[in-house]
Length: 263
Ligand code: CO8
Image (tube, rainbow, N blue to C red):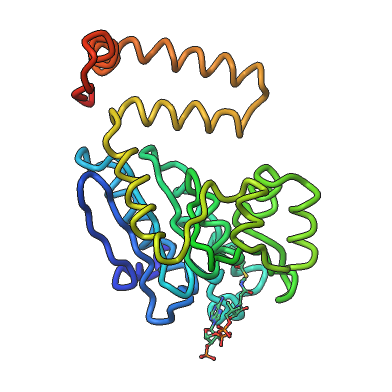
């Protein structure tokens, strides 16, 4: 971990209207994910996560690819001892799902292997019609390693996940939308505008409420229905402690838009 150089120069970061944009901007437009690159992505997202002006984070890639997977030129140098000793997956990857602010993956082009896994670590995926998803690791002597076999299966079911993981074949944007991997697909022309519109809608919600809502949905992913229902109820009750709960209720009665205090 200590000798990994964080590749911040491959990340473009900007914010507007409460949206924190993190663009994967590698010299290779396929955005191969090396250890230093993933740490830079994680650090950029974490900075937005603790920025009180940000209500939604959006991860995007290039026109050609969100990310075409692990950097195979880096991975080829590894052996069993070095992947375990360097904590190849633990560094960076495992922190991205811990982001509390809503985070969207905006996918154009390829999202393959680690790229598909990174997109699935976000809260949901919005894709352009040219997007292609896949877990092709089986074709390069590996299997998914950053949660792909688990998140893809939970997202699209065992049968479709098995087909993808065992053949390594790509899934088109429309197939991904039908199977639930992707929340929305937009035409290539409309994509940027529509992605921004969704992010803006989320960024304009009460920030603590959005975080509680995200937490509630995530529990469904991680536990039994009974536990999830219990957890949702506790989170629901906790909304009553927020000024924004009172504001939301009052705004409804007064037939006006709520003005969130974010507390
Ligand atoms: N890593 C490094 N370099 C890559 C990668 C990659 N994943 N993908 C492509 N490149 C390089 C190519 O070698 C080529 O370099 P050069 O110009 O020096 O020859 C350049 O990018 C352009 O590539 P192509 O000519 O192949 O571009 P095409 O448009 O013809 O094809 C594809 C695009 C379909 C994306 C094709 O490049 C491809 O199949 N790439 C490999 C995809 C893949 O197998 N991804 C899975 C990798 S394994 C993985 O992700 C495991 C995840 C485990 C956790 C992650 C831990 C870090």
